[in-house]
Length: 47
Image 1 (cartoon, rainbow, N blue to C red):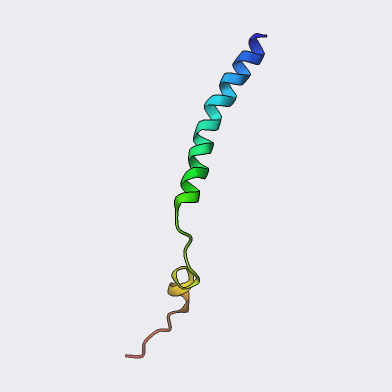
Image 2: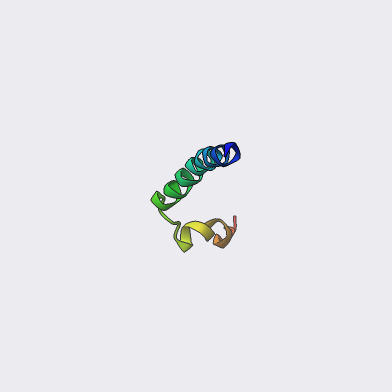
């Protein structure tokens, strides 16, 4: 019975940061294609 209680407490403690991570990931705006690849797609300017 003691192992069950400790396991439940451990699961509760671990699940809080995981939930916070996924809720923060949902709130962020996904980068568009141009925002992601703009540094790669820029052509060097001739001087």
